[in-house]
Length: 243
Image (cartoon, rainbow, N blue to C red):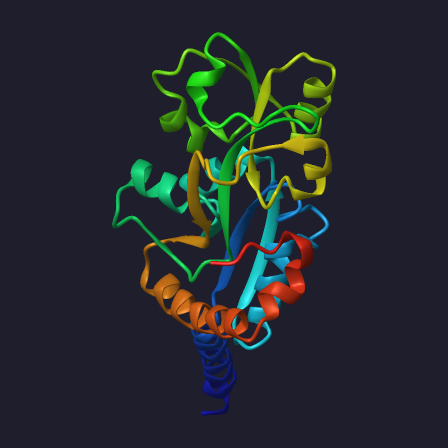
């Protein structure tokens, strides 16, 4: 009998370890794309601040991995992340309406045409026929539909700041950028706020699984409460865009 006790103890210990593993809370892996001022490698972007405040009230473990803009979406599409900041509409078109789910908005964004601050704003793409326009690499996932059938020479560069420099050196006739991302540069730019090219929302976008649905339900409730309490405005400061 004593000879059976030791193997039995090992069996019970192994079973308890297996049970603990099964019962452990899954980790939610989030891909973080580089979006000017809103998502950064230092984890101090506006959306990250909002997300981290919301997660304080949730019993869930989250990891974040920062990637270049387009790389982040590829990682998500290939299953290397459970969720990704932004890209909701784009991923629904690519993967199917039911393939992804999304949270309450982290913020709103609006694309506009910008010209140098000492010039009159341009209100319509047709005014730039045969002209050179700058935009940020990766933003074509949103802008392709806006730019199709337009006779423009679009140059894709690394950042809004680089596009502004090209504008100021008369290398570009205009640039396309999103508010609120570009707000830190607005003192040097002119645009028509009544002529948006595209409006949408940034959300946390996840693969449509039972675990992710449960996570987003809890997260969205927290995000909505933070928005209504004015925390979004407080954390975003001058980058806040109401919705």
